[in-house]
Amino acid sequence: MLFVISGITTLLFFNIERTAFNSATYKQAFENQKLYERMPDILANALLTSTSENINADPYLKALSVEDWKATVTSLLPPEESKALADSALDAVFDYVNGRTDSAVISLALFKSHLTGNSGVAAIQKILQAQPTCTAEQLLQIGLGFVKTGDVALCNPPQELMGLMTPLFESQLQVMTIAIPNQVTLIPATRSGTPADPRIKLNWARTVMKIMPVFPLLLLFCVTIFAVRSLVDWLKWWGYPFLITGGSTALIALVGAPLLGYSIQLVLQSQGFGLLPPILFSAIGETIGAVTGEILRPVLIEGSILAIIGLGMVLATLFTSKKENRL
Image (tube, one colour):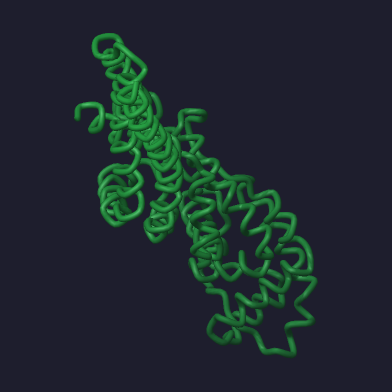
């Protein structure tokens, strides 16, 4: 019974440690839930935060709302490049969680390269069209080539002026490209290596999960040394625990997804805010069901294999016992 309990616990927690802290798990969950389209939200919020905290950022960048940034990102990045940025964000976050880096950042080089092309002009036009109609004073300011948003807000000029303003847009985009940072910090390095580092407690828990397979193996070794005296004994003492452990684990993997999902949700709520940027935290929270499925898939496979091996050993025990009785 002790082996069964430790075996089930080991299969569950060992696979949780192996898959829950791997960015590939979440990439597959994002794919299944079609959440890669959330990347414009992630990048828009990151850009908004970065420019608002940068005292050297130009006023017109600070005036852009999160919706303006989202429209810009959507216009500049096609879906496949948006997906690449999302994968980059996940890799950066889990590199941080796994201790490979002290912060999580994503590069904006691709975004900035699009900004200076035709798609950049189209994005500016889209932002302006979403603004209130320009006043005479704002039109005069635009005509002078000073598109500022410190004292004068962005505005929507008449449609007939849009084409005439293209050279101005292009010059302003060059300025914007310089002003936008080359990378955005998702998780700063301020707490890394300090007692407030959220990874410290997590690493202790993960260490326990990693060494858990030692306990059922030790029990199995002890049973073999102290209880096994023949081939039948070996098949019996290994077969039944394997069958019960594997079958129970496979059953838990099939029906236990809601409970595991709830447990992951609790962990995210208690520890996630220190490990994940808010928007990515929200996106992962929405994929809990898919993430749970990714985590439990290897548990189901391994449990089934263990149950099949145990069943084979049990059948071999019965066959060998009958053969010995005949003799």
